Image (tube, rainbow, N blue to C red; front, top):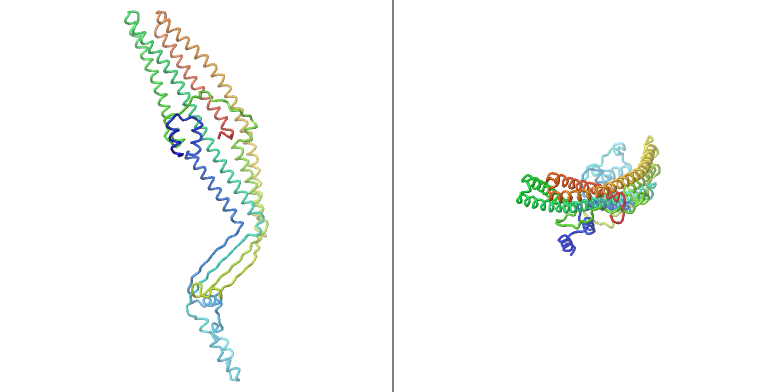
Length: 453
């Protein structure tokens, strides 16, 4: 249903509100930024999960005839016996000695038990569950949690920045399209005037009052204006291609009628409070504070608890209940001295925090400067547009006057064409100035993270 709705929208003239809705859901760059947010959110989950410790299952399968290993296997399986110590070679001489017979005690002590030193190879299956839980980390774990939350917030601001940039590009394209349409309309009106002038020249030539050169001049001017219109239409086609790229859809027609972008109702304080760039700088400052806490936590001990249960046998899970064993404990690790590395790390983190603090201040001052600069530029462009509109109105009336006087043979065709060229020049100047003014208005809007983004 959503796809059908989107297709129906694109089949008609697409207005700016519909386009903004589509770009938020379909633009590929925005989708990449959203995946970045999701990736950072998963990192938050990873760090949060460390507080719950970890449970590992280990299954070992071994075979060895090493005396230490074989004896260790039997101990782990609770199956060790005195016979494993070679008592079969020790008991007979010991019994003879107890009966009063002479026995070389030194030789007895130097007896090397064959079963102990050369045991038969043995299989060993060990199944083990181990649970480890951090009890105290000196605040390091909580600082890492807060750090990842700030990183998540930063990635969301990055995504908002991408959305802001894409909407800026979209609105700029709509503004360019509206200006192109208005300019083409004016040029087509001029083409109509030139056609009238051409017909007039032909009629005057037939009546013997005109010259062939007059007809060639007006036809040359008409061709020139046709070329300008063709260039404008080519720019429109390129704009449609770019809009299709932005919306990730095939766009054929849009509803672009706003020639002069309206000024957003913003003040300096509102922009500073809601600027994405300043929010990113402030988030970076919070990250630096967390880094200080993380480095400081290295001064404190780390305490962890662990519990382990296992069963061992020469077959898999053989007599598992009889051969089971457990181990529990608490471990404390405390780095007492490491050559001053921790102190240097804390000081470095503090310096980075001070540096970021200045960057936040610099970002605010930069936004203020941009705000003042953009307002001044918009005011200048407004004055220039007002002046150019009056100049265009004047050049149009002058052209109409010269056209009427040409009919009366009081002005030459060359003079009429010159005045018509001045009219076209004013139209193009007005187009360029309005384009610059709209770009500045959109730049002002881009400084602000508002609901329309």
